[in-house]
Amino acid sequence: VQLQASGGGLMQAGGSLRLSCAASGRTFSGYAMGWFRQAPGKEREFVAAISRGGGSTHYADSVKGRFTISRDNAKNTVYLQMDSLRPEDTAVYCCAAVRAIQSTTITTARGYDYWGQGTLVTVSS
Image (cartoon, rainbow, N blue to C red; front, side):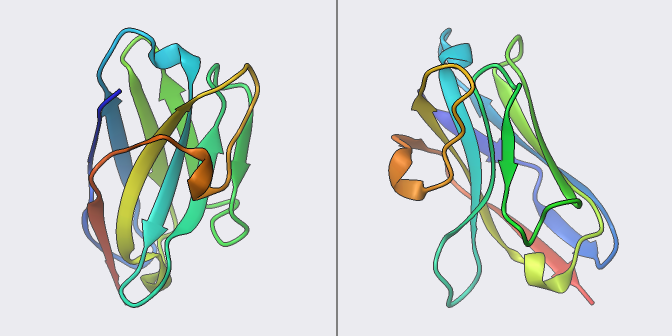
């Protein structure tokens, strides 16, 4: 599967952005999906994950209550709605995919087989 992330940009603190990750192929519903981010000079970190059917989600503590991951299997797309943005959310955000059983959410980067290119999110104070 090939992944294409979009939606990044410059936003003031407190604002909102929605990232999208479009996947190729006709078996998107068979993949668990995740979002990761990497800030300058820092290691890549987990942000959010969603099961193949969308019924299970998992968030990093740093974004819980502010970010929402969702998916539309008919459109082969996973989303990351980011609200109440903070300067520390500034990073390159990447989406990832792995074939998985129902209800599985994957929170580690090594658990994913496919990665999209990143989209830059910059939050100014």
